[in-house]
Image (cartoon, rainbow, N blue to C red; front, side, top):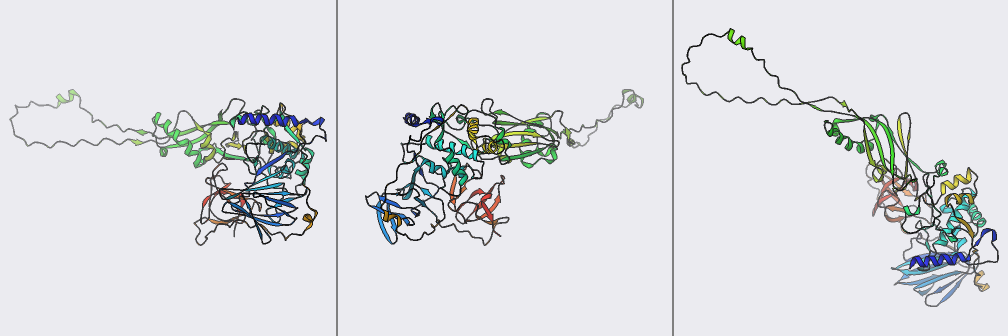
Length: 585
């Protein structure tokens, strides 16, 4: 049923699309998107500053108008919304809708924070506020493009990003629920509008309405930070049907870009220089081989002499996919054996010598002799331990790249276990290089940056490379006329804006820090943003909670992946990326 609805929606959208060369200004269709604002991390209160005139309509039917500059607070009490303004309050019931009355009307959630234009709908869910922002598609993109791709990127790369983000938004429109997308990486990061982002605004304006289509329908336009040198197929990442404008294609532009993240692990050819992590992976196979060849099957009796070859193989998917899952490491090695000690045999006299010295013996006289004690057998000789003896043949050890090698060798880039691994040989070592940040499907943002900035390719060339066989079409995004407000409401001065209070930060006791620990604080994020505290040191791990700017933390240790640290407060413990922290003196 959902698939049928999605198909009908795509057909309806395509009916409104016209090719770029024949676009006509007279064609208008209001494309508005509904965004569930998860990033605000609201509980039971929201504070807002209105930059333009607004009306507030409650679920109970009451409506109020507010001039530009008004500061409003909405709280949940007994599952009902209460609106507060300059000492006055209104019980809004189960819902409240704020609608801008002018083209520049927008809401801020911080005094100097970004702008959220459009209509803000507030409801109650589980005793907490549920905010949904409805705004024009092009305005939505102004809050997406500079955060999915930096405002400093080349213009043609930003244009490609604008088209991808616009296409993704159109493909995600869904009448089966009350929102189309969230403002997080679940869909596309939306952080409101900052007028200082002039480059991304230009890219959006110069590609206005253009989307990627496949066989006349809006494509699901996925993209990722870096594909590691080869694009991935949607079917390898998500279940279900996907448009045919994807292929497994080598991407030299992504690899060329020095900003593409690369993790490296060096395997020295000299066995004495191997790290503990590498040795620990090789020894189990060596112990097994030693036992078969008569060596002592114990790690203490084995030495890795050197590495002679390293290769990766066994792709997870059919050729030409290069997502390898196995690694072969060929080593030369030595071991010790137990050498048995033979018991010496005393010499025996020859027969003729016995007769030479013999004399006639008279008949024996029977005598009674005491019984002699039984002799104690001599202990068996103890085998001795040989010196280290080189094995006759090198041994090739095959290891699983995922999840073992990728984690233990420090090669994890994103935590999704989908990195592309290559091997490079030098005079003294084999260097493993790991690339890919994200799922790798569709456009690589680092690849697009390189294509536009170094190779001077246009956004249409970039999109043709990453979405082969696709077309570009244009849909008008002209917004509906805004309601006409009472002129008095536009100019009545409101109270001065005040900053929105942030959630209370967690306490941290620093009287006795553990050995090696230090105090840090969350600083390298935006004021309206948050930092995820995760259960494990990986971007795919469960989020325990969101931490806000200036939150103090005790850093307990740096993880095996040096990008991650183990941290705690008085109330919770977890992992976060060190790049967002600043060490306190």
